Amino acid sequence: MGIVVADNVAHDNHTTDHGKTVDKDKKVDKNKTDDKNKTPDKNKTDNKTKKNYILAKGSGDDIKFSDGFRGFMLDYSKSPASWGDEFKRVSTSKVSDSNTLKLAIIKCYELDSTDEIGDIMADFITTGYSDTEVGEAVEESYETVSDHEVVEIDDDTVAVFDFEVLKSVSGNESDYFAYKVSIRSIYDDDEDFLNLTNNLTNVTNMTNITDWTNITNMTLDNETNATFLKELYDFLLFIADMLYEAWKPIIDTIIGYFMMFIQAMEELVKMYEQLMAEIQSLMDALEQLLNMLESIWKELDGLLKLIGILLTALQQLLNFIESLLNFILSLISQLIALLQQLLALLYSLINFLLDLLNQIASLLQAIFDFLKSVGSFLINVIENAAVIIIAFVIITIGAFIYNRIR
Image 1 (cartoon, rainbow, N blue to C red):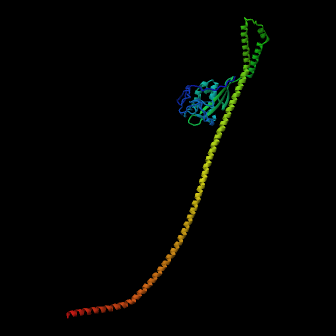
Image 2: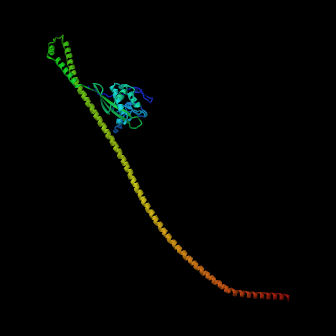
Image 3: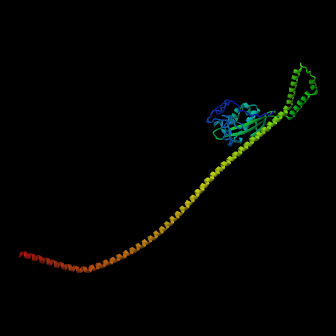
């Protein structure tokens, strides 16, 4: 019967090139709160399931994941994953030396070195080479390995490998290179058919008439009943065993094919889940794109409204500037007209003053002429009056003196 097994995490200790020792024999305490203050609860429904995140099922650089894959830490400059950390599946092409890592895992199974796979993977990831038989086999190999590879381990066993890269969702933890393997048994149909024919022949020979006659001829007295029943029981067991041996290859082949069918169905379901996960991721991306476009449209709508308001304000400003310019032009025109009127008035006033001055000058000239003509007369009158007054004064004084003398 073909047996499907998943490789367990190898619990071995190794020291990386970064000088830190990873204790893989240390069991993970699932009830212990890790560095991120998270206590894993298996009975708790994962609220990230809708995002199809893959959860770490351990802590360290060599751990199992919730999708059944075993992963190895890729970046030792970052902290290793802790229980419950979230990862998402990406193609192995994201890792430049992915083909070498795949070959290293396959060669570990081909050379029966699965107990050293943790150390070997750490060597290849940190230095690109492993000083082991597996490392030499990888160096000598020029094979190109896909993410899904079927490898014949020996004449009776075939291994089906699946590879993936688990990328940290938060980006704070290292990414992991992960694989899963299924071991199947190989049967030779011709050999099975030959074994089945021989076994059926043996059963027929054992059940021929002679054997049945010998059984019938047995003495069934009270002393031999126990022996007869024991022999009959042994014979029936022999018949059952022969029938089992005869049908076992067929049953094993049927079960092997059935298990291969189950494995194929599991792979189909995983492919479907992966497809749905990719579709969900696409839908999430489209939803984010629509939300982003909606936000952009809202911002654009607001921008357009703002531009409209600015254009309206600009139009009002232009109208105000136009009105202001018209007012200024009108004011300048009025000022020019007023200035012209003032200049005309000033010119008229100057002319009036000039005429007035001319008239005053003429009047003064006339007065001067009048005074000049009258002045001579007045001078004569004044002179005569002065003579008269002087004579009168003299006479008066003389009369006063005469009277005093008398």
